[in-house]
Image (cartoon, rainbow, N blue to C red; front, side, top):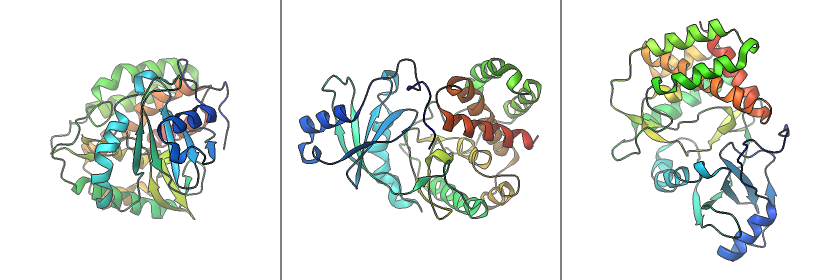
Length: 299
């Protein structure tokens, strides 16, 4: 797995290490304080992640402005969603409080085995079928009372300024005219006018667990909400390719407007992620170039 250059993903990133995790556990969950602790080489963009023994993991938010909300979502909704999904998802175990110099809530989850699809070979024809089945199951779940769209799951229009700023920031690294044209095509698609559905909100290779080429789990539900399914349709460009996208689309019977908005999500997330992480997070940069390339290939 590539190592992050520069040591931090964010300029205002909070300092964490194995020693801090052990002190927090000793103070708040002493039953786990003697278990082995291993920092994952990268963790996630929002959380530093530590494996705890063989069956648990610890997550500590990397930034103050991301320290609340995602765990609330997962602790409330994952126990309700998990039994209705065809793939295992993380199970929240315990919530930690600020302490030992760390200023925010943190959490303990179960550990799911597998390798993330950004670093493992994935059987794409099988993945197209499995991802369609996952989303079909998710969209069938009653959305009543679910969290409203936040940064994900709503209209593409609030992302316009940041997307265009990303296009400008990347300069000669991209074909700005082609990206802008593709983005404007997505913006012109009709808005979602159907009932809101459950969405994962961050459906890309880094959050898919894989074994022997098959998807066996789905991580990072911090952005889950009920809203426009196009946000998750983005996976057609984030993970699949030109040969397997049509299978995925046909299985889900995705209409033209939702397909166009899904492609817009792939473009927008690439344009926002690339300039931000270009020199700090090689894994997401590699993935974002893929999102962009696949989206432009469908022009």
